[in-house]
Length: 289
Ligand code: PMP
Image (cartoon, rainbow, N blue to C red; front, side, top):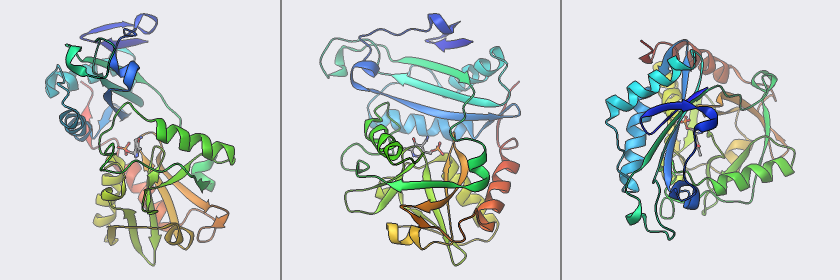
């Protein structure tokens, strides 16, 4: 495998960064997780737009133009023979002195890894996940804004470990007010009486690319969509629930905190949105070549 590192493709084993990179020392950097389906890099422009938004928030200068980065991403897939897979794009603050200030970091590093990923076992897409709410809260927009896709995922990692302690593969994270924010690496949706609900991003949810795609697909199918405050009560009493994310794609949830959701099986709206999502993935994005 070849990894793109600061303008060149290097062997996986030689793809190394300095121990003085502030991305390592402080989690100072940003990233995107992107899927490629049948040679189509799904919604690449939207991922790049979000990367640039994250960079602006943390005053990070991405040392490549979006067009050059887009080309390097395509090249990474081609060089590694990835036609269906997952791309991890990182921009770290770069090498600097010890101390939090990024002033000593002159060059941000750009890293592109083109590989594959499987987040949940295949059968869970058919039978649905059983998940739990965990004590660790999602950081709010007034602290570390979850809209920034930063390299600092510690609170999500803690939440993931708390889920595992309860035998669950995923966790619902609440915000400081007790409203549902999202899961550790996925956005959350419910269906109740024919309407699709998802937490508003002001509740601490990342503006997920898959989340946006599902909202668009639902609107196209004339399913009413509401972005609002949700509590666990609404999830427990929903007809259907599912999670979305680039790596997760669209996965049903059939149980939260020991309460069966709906019939306890993936519901018809979830299934139709799942089908619509898979229909669009190889047609919407940037084609390799
Ligand atoms: N929330 C968090 C915390 C995430 O890290 C991600 C991405 N893995 C998502 C939601 C889903 O976003 P996207 O659909 O853009 O992958």
